[in-house]
Length: 481
Image (cartoon, rainbow, N blue to C red):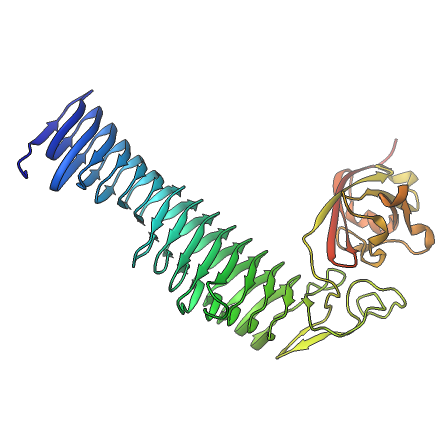
């Protein structure tokens, strides 16, 4: 072909082919072969079918590569126009400049590629460490597939990543940009999108789209347009359920989060800053919105045609921080009627368009911190129970026990501390706090003999933050002895 030879190998073993100029290479029913330093010209092809343990290294000349019904194939430094892998198990593609199609295959690993990747009807596929796209196309497309991981890539396309009719997909630690959108999830389930930088520009309508999906986690991402208000929606969720949106930074758009015709979502721990609109809910059910920081948004939130939506996490966990909240904090308690006793929660609710946050925070929310604790007694004898279960809590580094909100202390989220001045004592220079819980109520958490892990939670309030605190410890309950 093109003035160069066509080589055909069948039923071979241990073939080693090196430094050859070819027009076409066909390998069938072979085991344990290696080819390297191959040079092609024009419309050339490498075709492999029913091969096992094959290595192809350093191919030039832009041929197309077809791998069919094979096992354990490695392709590296393949400067080819395309690589099509079909019905194959165990393929590794690395350091290549090519457009890759993986179909009806399993256990594929693609890294350090500079083309595009399309995964169809496949499973156990990893795409990592690549710079893909830079075209009027999808950098990564996943369809009818499962157990796919897209991690630590630089992706650029229109939109860059599309996941459709797929399940158990992870998109993590990528930089994803696109003129009309960064990522689209359609008719998918069990998908996690975490720790990515997502951006869109040139008037793109949506940076991240979720449509007709379930069990989706979107967490710890930075989502933004290229220019202020250049994108209509940073995150748009529609006709979906069981979605969590946690720990993201969403800023400088027309709408940070829009949710329509969806149910059973949780939106928490996000920083929503400098948007024309913060969170917009329409025709939704069972949506929980809490521990978010709404900072300098023109319209903070709206909640139309809602059923059982809640904009706080109850007391003492609290609601959201609203930068325009003007209420005061003099009191504590679920009814905010224990005065004077400031608790970091406003004494009056924060109201917005068709919604209400009963427990607005008076300082910006900060992520939870963890301490350690010791129970006294750690071994409870039924016949000799003390009046109190006493707990000494060691504060985490940088935290002071004087900032613990006493009224927020809970044992397993249900038991409040005992009454009286001895129930809460700051000790050891603020590095520890001693808390007493009524033993009669604590016994409701340990109904029979055995060892139990009990959880103490509280809020820490500083001049700059409202911060949840948690500590775990073991206690043992015995009948006698």
